[in-house]
Length: 404
Ligand SMILES: Cc1cc2nc3c(=O)[nH]c(=O)nc-3n(C[C@H](O)[C@H](O)[C@H](O)COP(=O)(O)OP(=O)(O)OC[C@H]3O[C@@H](n4cnc5c(N)ncnc54)[C@H](O)[C@@H]3O)c2cc1C
Image (cartoon, rainbow, N blue to C red; front, side):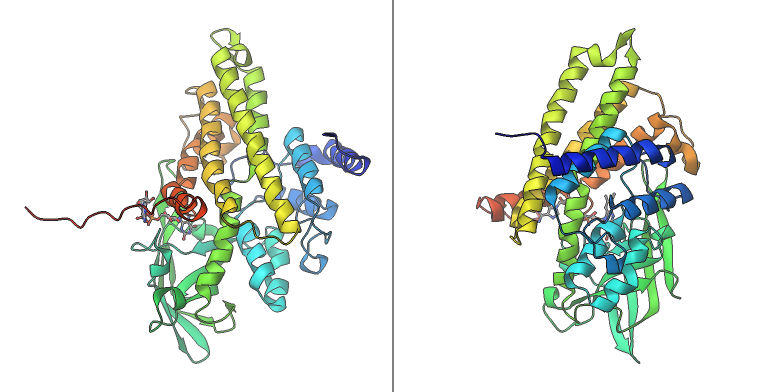
């Protein structure tokens, strides 16, 4: 078996390396995030877009690089970016979830209106799905939108809305057809966050920071053309987005980049007078994780290959989110164990605290626990894989509570 890249891909490898050698000093630090992109991140994003190292396969008319999908090219770019230790580009709900959704089911006008500004990091989106009574059972959403005078008028409440406090737009799942069965009564709307009647109340997590929010809607008006697909088709659109969310949450390229950072951290950190990389317990953990990251990477390449062939990967995609978020947490836990107490005493109000490497790892590690819940909890993913993928018996329903 020939495992080396062919000449074409070695040439691309050289091209990306030359790019990093020339511009690498302009890159923001990888990791962190969870805030509006800085000027440095926006400038770096522009460079990546111009060179085709981001949005490589998005049509040029929507601001992408316009090349056909080539799985190996993407793998080479991701590998070199990870090795070079530079920022792989802005990753947020708009770029990773809304953009592919619009490309798959949006109109040409919607793609032209939103994609370019979103991939440039200029328009930030949040996801309005979960409600206090509807998380895992998403189709039970009760936030409603009535049509009045050519507008949807939205009333209700969303919760756990990540980044709503600095977003420009929301993709919202709401009930527009109350007389239809629950899955058929939903619509997917694009809502400006500065519309009158939207109130965002931050929720503080164990990081000491507010990364998500409660979002309240009181008579919020949105023109009726701000809908993706038709009325009552929101459940289908929401699931297209969820498909991409789950791929984002377990993205193997991010895991590889993380692994490279930990390897480098272990090489330059000493514990009790010994280089961490030379301590068997730590090295074994790293090697086990490395094997698992490689397996994730190859699984991701298989999915991309299927996508390029126009095949539906079905439930195989769910493994990415399930496995990737668990793996992400184990990776950051290793970094935290290497760092010990360093970086723990940060000021949560200090937006720049994450520029400290150790602090960024601690915050990432806490956030990683949330990622096992966000986008559909680990329990739910496991049940879907087991029941629909492997054909195992259905999870028994819990017995109703009885009184003695
Ligand atoms: C960090 C983070 C970011 C998030 N960002 C967003 C966002 O941007 N937008 C958004 O809309 N939502 C967001 N969420 C919400 C997330 O999607 C929900 O928390 C998730 O879907 C679970 O819903 P829930 O919190 O209502 O829990 P519940 O549905 O009440 O579940 C509680 C527990 O019961 C288990 N459970 C529930 N039903 C079943 C079942 N049938 N079988 C087995 N176990 C079950 C679950 O696994 C879980 O452990 C975010 C959450 C987190 C943690």
